[in-house]
Length: 280
Image (cartoon, rainbow, N blue to C red; front, side):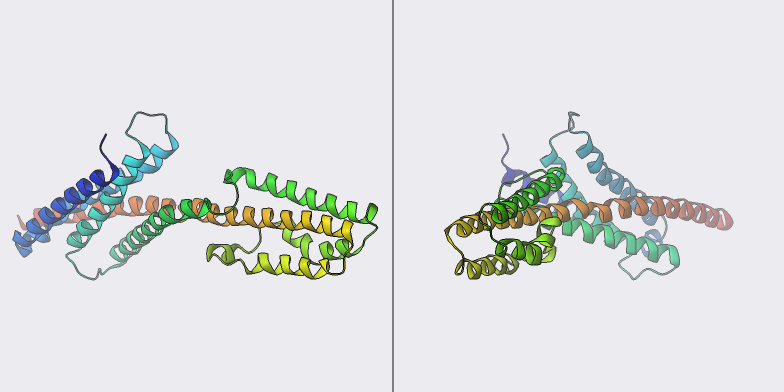
């Protein structure tokens, strides 16, 4: 079985060779050819490559199809995307585009490439982060788990009022924990690996612990464990949400790029052959 490193270097070599061939053909072609046949051919090749790249989304939604593994598709997607950058630069003649349609295509393409690179970075860093904080859970199960933690902490508060005859814990819950357990919290803090909100809540519990009796301390320990569990769950939510929702930028913009690119290709084909007919 071919190792990941071998596949990576093989794909990189193929991408480099194809990029070199494209640059060589561009260099050897005459300026007139670059603005006629080379422009048309490179445009449709680029469009076809973008369609193939877009098929990766279809492959992920149909994992049961025997169309290579997901990791192989991802490798192809990455290096074919890099190849498309070279082809795109050659296609626009390595210049700043002019005209509304060209500018729109360029902006769409840059957003697709940029969001793709962001997604690649996220897919390389987030899975490793998720293994460091709490139990890994399915994204769709997080709301139900959050409700369970909220119910658990409310149960502890009720026990504090009935069994320990204490309002201290209830006051702390109403003042600091109701909002914390109700919804995902500290989204951006989790993304930058900041634990300050977590430690702040736990430190406030420590302050209360100094004036608590034995029964209250036991209940506060339970609340502290629930705070840690909820904070870990919010950490999972923040990172999985980013990994999930960046596609809501990448995929729609890719679809828009393909649509506008197809229209652009048809317009240029009509213009090219009309021009040839008028000068033939």
